[in-house]
Length: 388
Image (tube, rainbow, N blue to C red):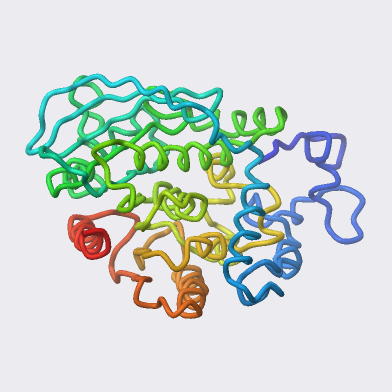
């Protein structure tokens, strides 16, 4: 949000573009009533009405699904503002950790782009393999001291362990989802996104500056995260002990967004489960929504993409692969109307491919923004059904 400063008897929005951005119809200066709830323009409804999502499946003039998928993916990738990194060697370095309950632990450092070398946790079940695998994508939560540790129990840092356990107690029924999956026979990879754990921590207020600086450099924070996640999927699929045909992306909250986004952008992902991150864009952009605060939203904001595709339209690029979306009816970040509108769009795409049985969508009554043990167990059972 842009700061305001007084000038005589009038109030102007500080910043070079302020007077233009926040003026109402026919007004010459910015006024307090030009903003709704502090951050949303009073003409936001007119802007929403202009969003037609012309490249959405069923709206696009393309009737061949494979051709549509290529066009939609290319359009999404064009808005990442980060080049394809497929030619960059991963150059992994592995460090063994102590064995877990039926699996071995390793730290791995890998080059995900030409400019980013990232540390993560790799869990591999005991046995010969090849194993089904899960790219586990951590949440946001405005908690930056831990990233991969939100999903995989840390084994070499007592301070991070205490922080991670408190996070698991708050949102995950005291479980570490990665360790649960490894015990069930899945290879698991979880890496820090930029700003978390070994790649941070940033402060809440630094997010917007980080995003702005990347925009000024012709790049994008959300685009970098998306490219890195897709590259991580390719790295996991290429490991000797992993069955490349059975790799899933799974995440909660921002990790849920990252899971379906990775499935849309990478053919290395055979299935995806997204917990507590799906909505229609128009239903999300309403007064009071958390997205309107900016800051954290920049990890999921691809400038200009909404002129072409809605949020579920991007996820639909992954069709007809198996996908599981589960959301809480009392999740304050997403309205039930937004979730159900997105589910309807997703359903139409999968049904058009005669693959409705591969799409599972659920809105759990009485559940907020959490990934509880019962929700985890449903995801684990679903993964077994589509990957085993």
